[in-house]
Every structure is written in C-alpha cells, then in structure tokens.
Length: 572
Image 1 (spheres, one colour):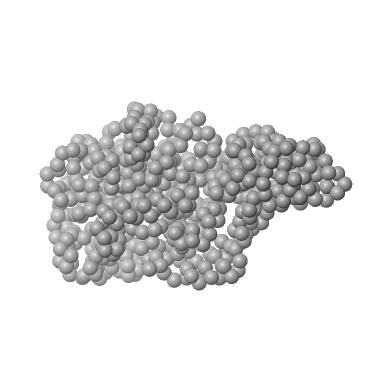
Image 2 (cartoon, one colour):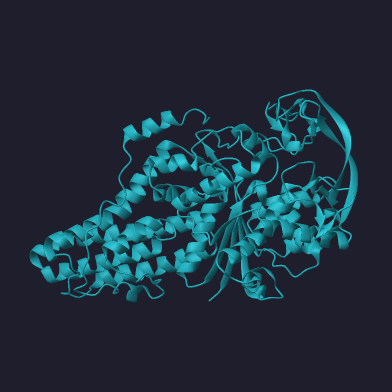
C-alpha cells in the first residue's frame, strides 16, 4: 500500500468558483484521489480556501461585511459546493486559521536565520482618497501590452503579462476608483529566491516525468531575462498573518502582514495540522505526511493546479521549503492544466463570465459536469466549453452508452428471468473474447489513471462501456432467448456482472451514478478488478437486484437553448 499526499490549488475566497477553476485543479485531483483509494492506497487529500490578500478585502468591502465575517461565510459556501460536486477532501481548511499563522511565521523566521530574507525600502503607490498604500492588485488601469482596460497592478488578466503598478496607463484605486495616487516610500521583506536559483534549477531538472507545461513555465521564470528575481513577502494590509520571526516581533515590520502568495502554499501543510485537530489526532499524525524525519520519506506528494499557479509551486514555495533548511516533504509530481475557455472567451471570476459551480448544480447533478469536464480536461492545450458539445457528450457518453447499457440488461433480465442473476448456461467464445479484451482495456485504464492522463483515462473508460454495448448488440440475448434460453441466461449473467464492473471502474469519474448502480445491484463489493475474469463472476447466479431509475436523462435541444441564453451575459 502506497501513501499518497494530494493537494489541489487552494481557491480564493472571493466568491464562488467557475467551472474553469474546478477542472484546473480540484476535480482532477479528486479523480486521482478516488482512484488511489480504489486501489487500496492510503490517501491524504487536502484543500482550503485562500483567504488573505486583496481579493478578500475587496470582496468583503463589496459585500458590506467585515473581512473575517465574509471569509467565514464564503468558506462555508465553498465547502458545501465542493461536497455537492463530490470532491472527496480529507480536509477543506482555511488559510486564516491559527495553524497557518504559526507555520508561516515559523518559515519566515527560519528563512531569516539562514540569510534568505532582506529588507528593502521601496516606493509604492499610496491612495490619498483611501488613506492607505495600495497593493499591486488594488490598482487597476490599462495594460501597456494589450490595451485591456481592467488590468491589475501585478498582472494583466487578459494577456497574462506580469506588470508593476507604475506600468499601467491611467491607474486608479480598485477600492474607491480614485485617481489621486502618489508614490511613497515603505519598507518590505523580500525572499532571496535568486540565492536559491541553482538549487531550484537542479531540483526541476530531476523531475523528468513532469508535464512539459509545468517544467517549461518553471524554466522560463528561472532563466528568461535576468532570471529568477527576489520577491516581496510582506504587504501594507490590515487583513493577513502578522509579520513575525517565529514567535518574536520583527522590528520595523509592525502593522504589516505576509503577502498572500507566501502564506497560501504553506496552508497545504497547515491544512494537515487542521485535519489532525478536527479529528482528534496528534501532531505526529499530520507530521508523518509532511516531515521526512517523522515518517514522510515514503510519501508520494502530487499537486494539481492551473498553469497560472505553476511559478509559485515550482519556484517560490519550493524556495521557502528549501530555504528553511528543514526536512519538509517536497512535491514529487506537479500536474498542471491549461485553461478551459467559455464559448469563445475566457471564464472569469472577477468579470463574472461563464458557468459557476453553484449554477451548474442548479441545472444538472454533479456527475454530468464531472464527466464532461474530465473528458475534456485542458491538458495539452486550452479547451473550449460550448453548450452544444456539452449536450452531445452527455447524451452520447452518459445516456446512450453507460446509462443505456445498465437499463437494457437489467430490464431484459427482469422481463425474462426475474430480478435475480440467471444461473443457467456457460460462457462461449464471444464471452471469452470480451473478457480478454476488457482485461487489456482495464490494464490500459489503470496505466492512464496512474499517470494522471485524465483525457486518456476517460477515453479508455468510455471504450470499456462501449465494449459491453457491442457485446449486447452482437449476441442479442433477446433473440437468443427464443431458441436457447440457457445461452441467453449466460449472456445476461455476464451483462449484469459488467454493470457491476462499470460501477467500480467509473466511481472516480461519476461517483453518484456508481453508488446508485451498486445500490440497485444490492452489492457492497466494490473491490478493484485486479483479476478481470474473477470480477465478472462477482454476482453469482441467484443474486437479487433491482432495476435502477434512469441514470442519465438526455439534454434536450430546448434545455440547451435555454441555458445558452441564460449564460450568455455576465453574472452580477
């Protein structure tokens, strides 16, 4: 049994996430976690809300609530939606919790001890109207690169170019809209990432099995231009983790907080400490996942994230861990994703464009979305959500292939043999051929899942479903029954065992439908088919079952047109 630590990029607290966020990290991480549990491995799957920084303060101000109250409410909302999407986190934490305060301050202290933090006097934008320094993301203006008029002071959302606030054309405060801005001097702490460049370079070079998308982004940041730059880790904000060296005050840093990019990844570790506290565990219980001197040396740590988060997870967070000089577990495999676009444009939380997770669940159950998103995961390139493609995929894959197979075989058995697996007859050449084919396909499916090849896994799973449908079409037990009832009985027995096999194999993708199938089959044997021929005898003759309700209803043209219209605008 392997031990697998899985983290997905932690979502910002500033509102409900869209489907692009979901497929970019949390959903494929859940697929992998569920699969690894199916294979009998010990899994720790962690996520949390990212609650500090500009987006939290802006969203709270817009909602007219104190930021702590807003974050608590939104954590509850995001946690509930995650559960309804079937995201099987072992713990869904909060970066504002005491565990993250303590660990972030601890790491900062260790980095300072090791000479990896320097104090910098710098000029920052001050808003006279707001009476405060404005962090980069609090400043909006026109991007000098692409002309987008809502670019932020740290990055243009439209063209992704990294920016400084002074680069913006016609800058304004994102808080008040005021253009009464001036540049003032302030002091901040910088992490000396540049001093760790060679260590990071060697570490990334050792990751030969990482996606090209991941390593190419990391190497670009390491080597392009002047190479990896030192980066500020503090901000002039009220909401955040106070700047300290461990437990000690940090002279000159009074009233400042750590920058969100510094504390957010540390929450992965802190989240495990939250899990321990929430479940009556000890420090040793979470440290065995994160400290290589306390049991984590045999842990396989996998991260999932969108490509925009790759620089922080391949460089900045590793720099924090390496720079601490302590034996923390570092990521073994980082699975990154491109963007999912929406009907010819981009999904956007800040602009309210696209379908959001709560809206999706108002329309259809989670499995419909899980299947489409995973089977169209933006792995090798960006992918595109369109309502027409969504309708076709749901109808053809889920309704016509999986749902239709389950319905046909269970209803036919009920009509001819009753609600029990038929005992008569024995398998012939067609059955043995199918079993041999499925054995190869299941092994291929396992290979793709283990390699985190999400789309290939979905394609192989669908091919396994199709094989059952083709078998039914070719053998036609409804015709065989007229002349050879025993032969038809054997065909039906295999068909019912295929239904159970499909439920087990499909559970990581469509967990609700899988559970409904297993309930109808009155079986709690969800063991993985290491031996496919044996798995296809799991339901013996005489085993009773019920015919399940329709697993997947088809999406009508009228529904599709209604949703196209409903989601053609912008969420307010």
